[in-house]
Length: 274
Image (tube, rainbow, N blue to C red; front, side, top):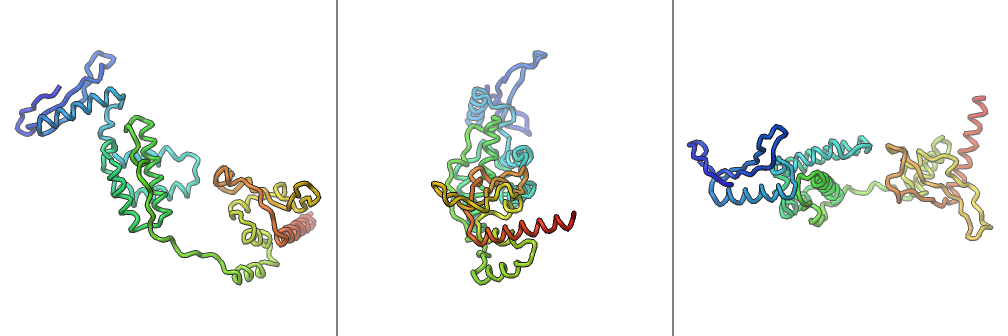
């Protein structure tokens, strides 16, 4: 029902709906207020709709900031601490100050589009995608917990942002200089593989001899190439970045030679150590 609160300080229309009863038999009431009777009726309809949809009490006041904070606190279990730290920093700088106070149920696709349009003037395309992902996953978690009926973030296209930082890739001459400087180093094989094989350095640091084939089999059909199997990394949990990152990479002769020399060095060290 909708009634009028005539107290001088209030002078507002009150929308009220019974949501159930406590174990003691006390009536549980959910209320909302508005300045006009029409607005109060609209809020009454929303209260009834939320009740029919099974949305919990308090969902109407749940904010975007609360959704993001909840996801950061409970939705990143097992993730790398540095990645979690990066997500927190991005949310604190770009999401919570701009959208945090917005009630989640009132967040519209237009709000998200405007926010993204503002972002692209400041950050790179990669950061825009990352921020969209953080907001999307936060709202998705809130949706699964009946805080909101739908996820409007999924409806928004991700625009292109600013150009990222200039590439720091080595030139051919620089790469050759690095390889030459590392020839007598214990990191020679690691350096050669890092520059020539196409695996991430975090994957190469976890590489073992069990995952290295230095011989191959040219007589097989089809021929078996000399290769390394990239199945592990030094990331949290020891797995590669994604499932698809598990792969076997053929090695050029220079990598094979570097690894054979590395094995000889290892055996020599073991011999000296007894």
